[in-house]
Image 1 (cartoon, one colour):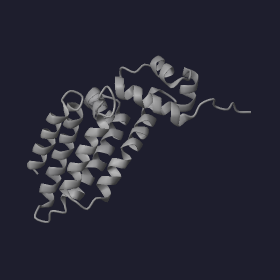
Image 2 (cartoon, rainbow, N blue to C red):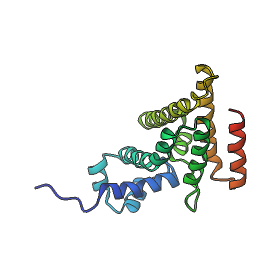
Image 3 (cartoon, one colour):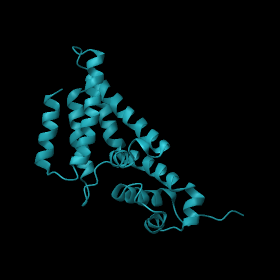
Image 4 (tube, rainbow, N blue to C red):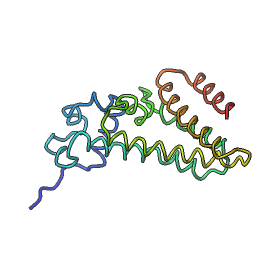
Length: 187
């Protein structure tokens, strides 16, 4: 008879997500995961296979947290203004805690760089491509722009969003609002 788990996977992944978000992938040890998740290493390995497995589940958890912002962006008919609102919504999302953690995906891509874990890098890249496609879709509402220009602006906005994520950990709200306004003056 299989032993029943004494924990709910979604609850322990939520705790792991917070830990990775605060400390980073590389700085998070198995013992710190064990402590934060409230389960032993055997249970972690049994349920998730490895630290990488826990992190990949944490990325899913994080994306679920972002989903309301993405849904609002996707459903908006306001073009460029919808993207600008996404930036403001994301700013609130990234600073909604005491430590101003920024974006888990941006933090991880900055931490791992080009030589980090290939699967994690691929998952982050896949997500950024989804966001870039949403930006391009909203920018396409301006029928005066070529597809080439739309693609360049979507890339620009994706990089600006990553910059906003990092800046949100340091700068005050007034400076961040100025950054957003200036970003959209250039589009």
